[in-house]
Length: 53
Image (tube, rainbow, N blue to C red):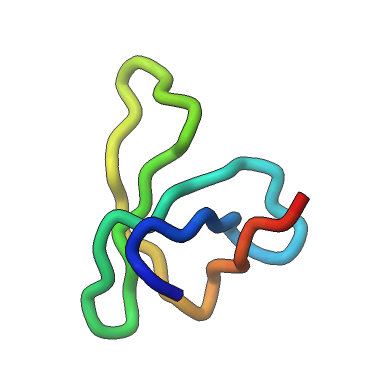
């Protein structure tokens, strides 16, 4: 996984996020919908799955 990749949380996740930063075993991610009040947050890399259509 690299900065800029699109991911989902877990294999069955339906929301799309972009990896903003990677810090050791965690990534800071941000939702791609740009909803008001959205913010970056940290998730374990192990909990993220690459986004596929």
